[in-house]
Amino acid sequence: MRVLLAGESWTTFHMHIKGFDPFFNSTFETGATALTAALEQGGAQVDYIPNHDAPVQFPQTLEALKEYDTVILSDIGANTLLLHPDTFAKGQRTPNRLKLLQTYTANGGGLAMIGGYLTFQGIDGRGQWHETPVEEVLPVTMRPVDDRREVPEGFHPKVLDEGHPILEGLGEWPWFLGYNRLQAKEGADVLLEHDGDPFLTVGTYEKGRTAAFASDCAPHWGSQEFVDWRGYALFWSRLAAWLAGQL
Image 1 (spheres, one colour):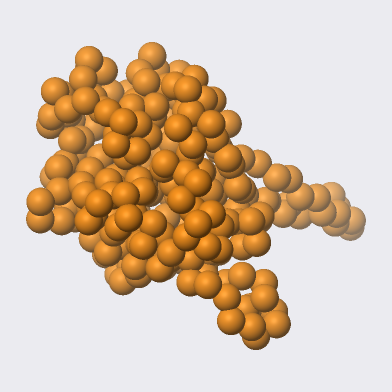
Image 2 (cartoon, one colour):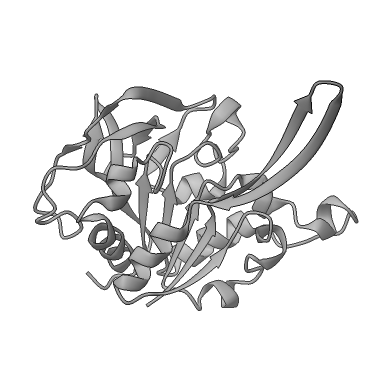
């Protein structure tokens, strides 16, 4: 099984002021390490594209997307895929990769979105996935505004369907610190929830399968307890296999 994972990285610019003198530095970080390892532990071949490479490296043709059984978008804004440098900097026409993802899924591909500050709508609504072809594919609808729910005291998501092949035998889930508030579409299956909000939702779109995981795959919303959980690798491997129609 081949999995394409896009997003889940960031660059931070720091300003230091020491009396009269300021100086600057930057750091690159990724939250994809644990998720990639979990998928590979389950036997998947993972191609990972961090956010800064996605505008150019994310597939621009349906044929290239079809090389993957499952595509996972994690903490990556819609603009990153919409605005290829040839479009943004040179004013040229380029493929609409959100529409390509819709067609890919309709033809039998698996598509998942993992929550964060730039997926779904995210912080200040900057994710910009609302009313896109990708929202049409996913088993949830999004709020047109900032959809974060911060829960600094932590919570354990409630299992609604412990017999589903993705969740079977995993038991109680670790705690999380927040998530994106979503609404399940009619006909979708909510497998986990918190306070009436869908936390893990799965569904179908024409010939394909889709999933929406409302929280992070790693800190900060996804706690270190979640990453260290005995069910972490099994859950992500099962989710990818289910999306690919192999479970």
